[in-house]
Image (tube, rainbow, N blue to C red; front, side, top):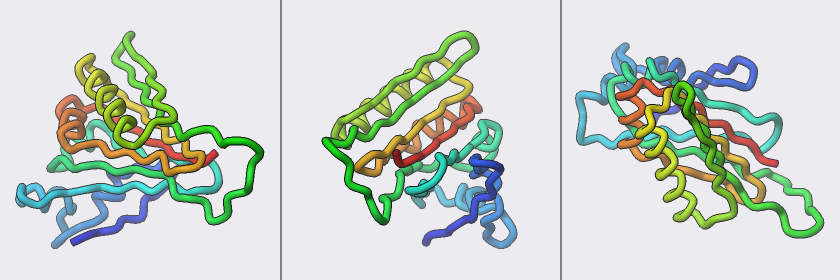
Length: 174
């Protein structure tokens, strides 16, 4: 079973929670309905367009706390239909994780790694952010030749829910 939601945008920002609340089953938001089905795995997938300005998907910490259940989050930048040839080797894909917790915060650049190593470093950065009490986490996907794809496991999304941490994910092809 899969559902799609059109995400309303304000500028280049899209509140994904509002869009997911609009997807309903018998008049109830779908994530709330699925909260009564713990054996059903829920994945939320974000695809960022290959052209134009970077766009950002926003999950507010308050919405995450009340949405009814956790989910695994997938995000990637779509491939461009036509990729102009550039001189020399293109720069590698990069994922940037920034977080803030009051006066504390950090930025981690994850660049030019294979998918498994990129995922391992992403999860380590997110665990550190949660350990340090992050109130806001920003993840930037900067795709050059690949998709700069990531997966945020449901256990980490659950930590965001528990701490009411705002999550922003942006994607762009450069």
